[in-house]
Length: 349
Image (cartoon, rainbow, N blue to C red; front, side, top):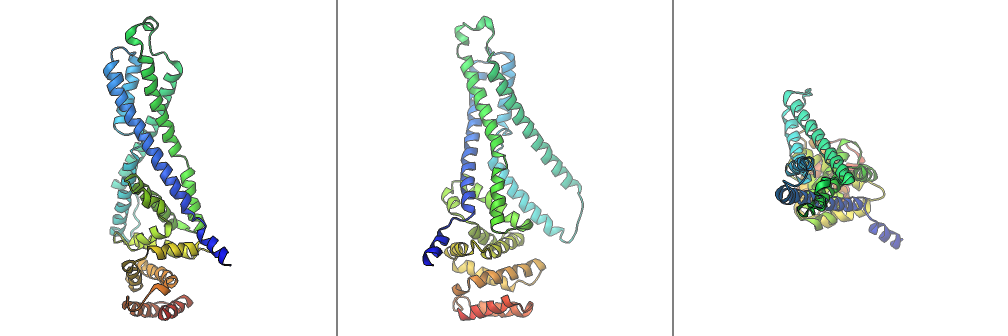
């Protein structure tokens, strides 16, 4: 029985494969952006600088267009900026949601304009990538970079190799761009949420946040933190954050669901206990006093179930407010078996 328990603790968590996918995606994205930078330098320095009067007018305009596309960041996606912008959009949506709480408005002018601009930029990006791939592949196939009368000329000798390198870089970058946007990664995101039974918009949101935030952490140099991160610890960070009540609700709800999963509750609880400190545990206990809004009451219910799992770690000498909040939470809610068990275990600890 002990060996089976040890084997269960050593079993990999569902997000381990997702962490590996995050690392691979970030590395490949950096390679893609590096190819774009190299293609831009090659176009401006070698082709437009050294062979601008020797290459065909057709190749001149092709190289100019691709260099322009690369310089403004359409091909390559500026993935780092996209993730930062997605975080900004998420915070903006939270602020708007608080300002318009309880109001179900349609599509106002700013919202519709923002959506239209986003769609237009996305379509422009797709068109630019497709154009670069088609142009590069077409020129690589034809290989007619030099007119027949100039094939033996000394000054045209290196044009073919120079253009092949440029079009090869652009074509490879375009293919990587398409590969990065295949649904394989999102299948892993969906699978991770499914294994933890993180259903609904809240479950989807926490797994997507896990992906995007850890991606940003990796590309900013925090690679060790990305590899060692797990979903229960990430949900804990959201739950005790001071950014928005929405993040706290998503985090504590995810913690509750993960700790109630049959297959992964034990290793997840071990990970959570390893990452706990006095300040974090105190913030979780303070959630038992949330009674102002329906969201806060929902947070209190999830926090009580999470703290039930952590009851042996709650010392009344360290957290003197615990007994008052537990009793108050029990009196202000319906007398469920979960609350009675929670009070009993807390007093036992």
